[in-house]
Each structure stands twice: as structure tokens, then as C-alpha cells.
Length: 251
Image (spheres, rainbow, N blue to C red):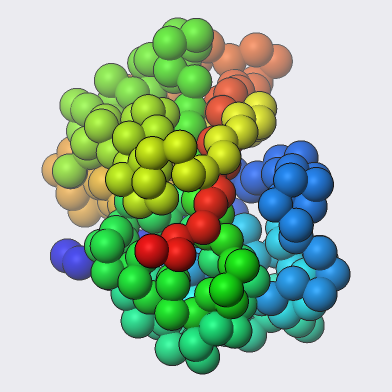
């Protein structure tokens, strides 16, 4: 399965159960990166529109670039008026050259071919344009709940790679932007779940077995055990660090 096909069978789950991004991200981009009401943004790997809906109220125009038809369809159900939905990839966006102020990749960059994407971003960005990369990273070390959940993913995930979800993104950022040529901020974020939400969050991941897979039933049984162990008043909580990187890609 290619990276652009991974979420075809779980786009609705992704739209409903994936975390959003804290509004403080917008404040940072406004105050420190120059995002404004006249800005044109290309949201690359926009998925079901979670990051698009965050940015759209603060920009003139957002191109939501997503290769997966099912994910794009979910986004288009609730699309702001200043958003243009585009079928494209990070390496071939279909956007006109020198036309955007910001390229945004929210929980998507790890699926790109970085150097090919970098070339494409340079093509579509205006001369002073910036690339913004961001991810929600679960706080593993401080949470027994998340530690148990991570073990479940390692035991049952079809191709789960903990390194892919690592919060140590400085090295990839340095490779992409150049050492010392980017800014980095971290903002707290969280999700609270009842069991249905907890299950939906799990099944929204591309590496989680779905019904019909032999691993599905034992995985859900383990998830019930984890929930019962850690729930408080029928809720569990994931704490995240939202990492934001931005910089120019002029050379």
C-alpha cells in the first residue's frame, strides 16, 4: 500500500477522532512568521481538513492539497469558502509557481519524499515564502496510559514504527531546512476520550488492524483492559506536544 492510499478505508475515522491543533499555533505563525489576512497558504497532505480549518480563518486563500480521494471528500464536507481543494502530492502539487506565502504540512511531512517535496515547495513559494512543518506527538514518558497504548501498537500494529512517531524531529528539520535555518516551538495539546473515542482514535491509524483481521479482536480486548485500568470518571486523556518548525527553502 502506498502512502497516498493508507487512509482510504478510514477517512471518516480520521476526520472524527484525530487531534486538532492548538490555536496558539496560529498566534505563533502570526506574530513570528508573518501569517496574515492577505496570506496565501498551501496545506500539503491536508487530509480531512483538520489543519486547513485551523488556518483558513486567518488567511486570504488556502489550497488544500491531498492525493487521497476519500480523505479529500471528508474535508470537502465542511470546507471554508476561501479553501480550494486540490488533488495533488507534495512532490507535484499542481499549484502555480511563485503563488503562495506559506507551505504547511501538518502531520504529513513524514510521508513525503523530502528533497523532491523541497524542490516543489521552492517552485510554488513566493520569494520570501516559508515552509511550516508540524506534528502532534504523544507524551509517552510521562503517561502510563500512553506507555500501555504504545505497547499495544507495537504488539498489534501491522507496520507500526515507533521511530516514525518520535518527537525528535530536529534532525529531519535540519536536513530539510539546513542547520540553524529554522525556528522551532512546542505547544501543549490534548485529547479526552470516552471508550468509543479511544477506540476511534486507535482505528484512525493506518497501522491499526480493522475488523476481519485476526489481530483485531485481541487488540480491542487489550484496549478495553487499558481503558478500564486508566479511566477516571469514564475518560482517558492523551497529552501531546505540538511541534512547529518553520523556515525558508531558498537554496
